[in-house]
Length: 411
Image (cartoon, one colour):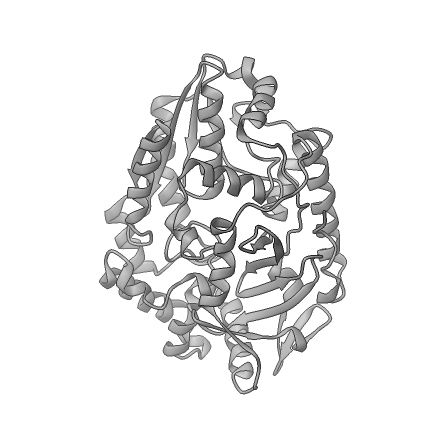
């Protein structure tokens, strides 16, 4: 995932933090890796940067390609515009005539990117006449119900109708109990989440669908977005609009903060808004008391037992380790590798860091003053982001060691 700035109480960027898979990396101001941690549990990680040789962390015959696991996404420290209003003026020039009189539907998750999309389109609607509404799908059992309250708050605050849907509750419970929790590579929950949206879209037939994709989120997303228009930013393509895809994290956070609609997950130190039991979360993103916070602990306990029995028990992974490391998130082979590495590392005396500390780093960009950075304009932002991410992608592919993940962040 992309690096997040660690911001001081004076609004200065002190460094960066990134979490991907079960690794967390801390970077200095120049983008050099200062520390690399592997999470042993949801509360404790250990420093492993001194154990990485080349690209890999190798312990007792088990090996993890750290460079690929971290998937470090660099980006330039810039703003694409000096304000939301100025940016929307540019958007109006780009797409105003094309969307006038049309209906636009936003797939809203409550996360910072979809929140930014709503903010941009709400401001654009003051300048261009079009119909705007959003849809949010609650995932029963896996997602906290407080997200529904947050969505209702956003609807009132921005004056945008947000249709609140829910995945098929009975089918969701059946699949959890019988098949176990979704894991990376088998995220069947996505189908459950998207099906109600597809049915609504079929009924309402919006002219344009809006999403919060950005160039610097993931390498996979960058390839898709940049490949569609490599020479200049194109935010409207066919019947899809991507209002913030030339934004950096700084643009996104500034806008979301200005709306007064910051999801409580971010204030708690979560790097992303997702289901409590999303398989793509890192260990420190799942609180130790997760079972007490879900809506039906009995269903989740049954799902955990099913996952373990069907996919992990025969690998020799103890039940206690399976739970502590939330190995249900991973493909069984990957789970065995991570479990083996952790088992060996626990016998070593290594630096430890607590989740509370790392989570606090993620909160700084939501609590501290916004950092000062150059304002370059949307088209120049597009060029610079592309340049940085391409360099980061090339580095990740070619890097022979972790220390080569340096280039990327700069003024």
